[in-house]
Image 1 (cartoon, one colour):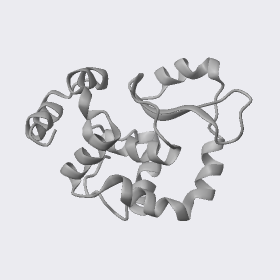
Image 2 (cartoon, one colour; image 1 turned 135 degrees about the vertical axis):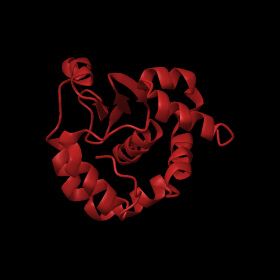
Image 3 (cartoon, rainbow, N blue to C red; image 1 turned 90 degrees about the vertical axis):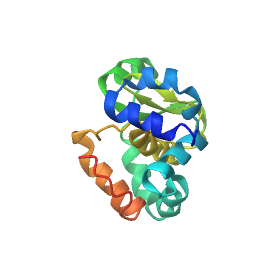
Image 4 (tube, rainbow, N blue to C red; image 1 turned 90 degrees about the horizontal axis):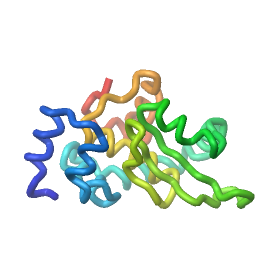
Length: 162
């Protein structure tokens, strides 16, 4: 993927393809290792290691916030269409806390990554996907992005997504 980086980056920046279209063209890019690598090529910051190192100290507060955003399974498809991007978690029915059937990322109503190991890893990958697809961060989530950028990534990456 590193050999085709400049070609791929030019395509993303100039043509601004839809997420599903770009995934169809560059399927190998949409794996956790490749998103980490692509983010590093764009920003020179190791995404997942930097993100996870800072996350531990903020986890209790974040968990309580994320639990308030729960939706019922019947409404998943509707909500995927309603929001530009996000992390979804499908909990096992009647399962213990932390028992998930799937954790993934969707962009523009399209599942971009699924079967991610944890919600924390999914959040890191979500940021990576935003950079890989050269997307603007949703204005309604501006403060979430600022928190991730300034606290969890220690002020990196320098690119502004406002």
